[in-house]
Length: 418
Ligand SMILES: Nc1ncnc2c1ncn2[C@@H]1O[C@H](COP(=O)(O)OP(=O)(O)OP(=O)(O)O)[C@@H](O)[C@H]1O
Ligand SMILES: [Mg+2]
Image (cartoon, rainbow, N blue to C red; front, side, top):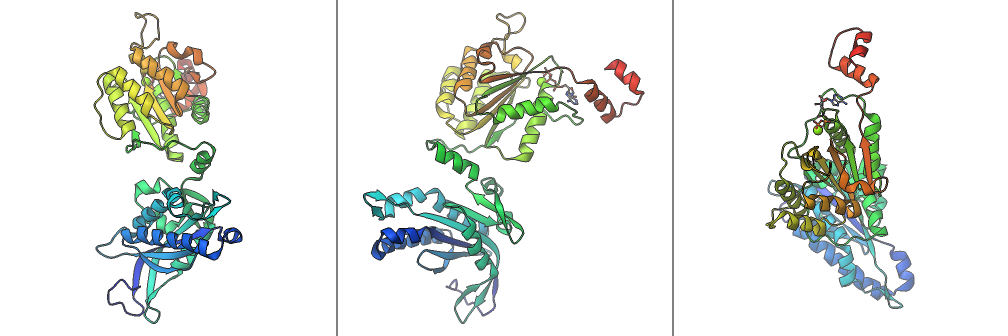
């Protein structure tokens, strides 16, 4: 178990430790004989070892129901935690496939699926030449952490989490329990797991590589004040299963875009949302460019689609069931104004089609800011579409703003202006 090099007693190396075990073998042994269980366990062992060794990991031991693996940091083998976590993810993500392919545990014609759980820690390991293998407290803690993990999930220590690539970090969430007073992180996110159990999702055929598109986002307002109720309303719309479209409607300069931006920043600071697309029509009011960017965002890479109707159809068929937040800022640029009739309708029918489709089918929210009423979707008001009509800043908020930007004067003079 040495890595094939000349190791001496007491040599210390940095390593990532992965502990894995199969859950529920006791109830299984009531139904199945040793031979039947043995075949499935052997298959599991081979499968795990193969995945680990592909990424330069080694086996420390395997004891019937589970084992311990390590990834030693070397100058030519860096990012050991990422190697361990990617291996663990491969196991968890494909465990259904393992059961389909290797599990021989059939009882009265029905297959008994087995489950696994994985714990990961990062730290130092010490070489013991008498036994010819590695020891460390991290080996112990990886096993203890694994014991806390939910079925078919990974649990990693905070020291391992710190070493992880940023993109992988996004796939974990903080676990309810701690280990040695430090946070633990779990994959997959529990929220997603519950959703998956209740309504299993179709596999996504098209990989969504880009997670957010905010090229022409409105800049944040440095002295933002008030608007607490409006911001809470947007949060409510976003969290509601029913609401698919929310529109902040108000006069020019009243603060619509600023509110959208403020809410957006607050959302990002509290949690990581999967698919966020912001389009500012003031900066770019071309329907083709907007649709091209949305298609590219959903698809993960550019594709050639002929006209804007084709793009809208493509979006409808390919956006899938994952949650999206689509912010359309300054949408009046794409609506009929005072001269055009009827006032507030979308100039392009295909845009209207996209909006009504979103109102009926989107998982997530389209958040609009516009000076005009949303004529095309007014039939959905109070159901799938919520109107957030903006009023001028309250007297209190205006006073706060004057104070924040450092306007000097008497309160009564401020109030005259307000
Ligand atoms: N809550 C606020 N606190 C502080 N400043 C604000 C607030 N709301 C708006 N402002 C100020 O007013 C300016 C105009 O606001 P904003 O651009 O958000 O308006 P809008 O309603 O989106 O206008 P338009 O219809 O022209 O897009 C901002 O740049 C900012 O300086
Ligand atoms: Mg605006």
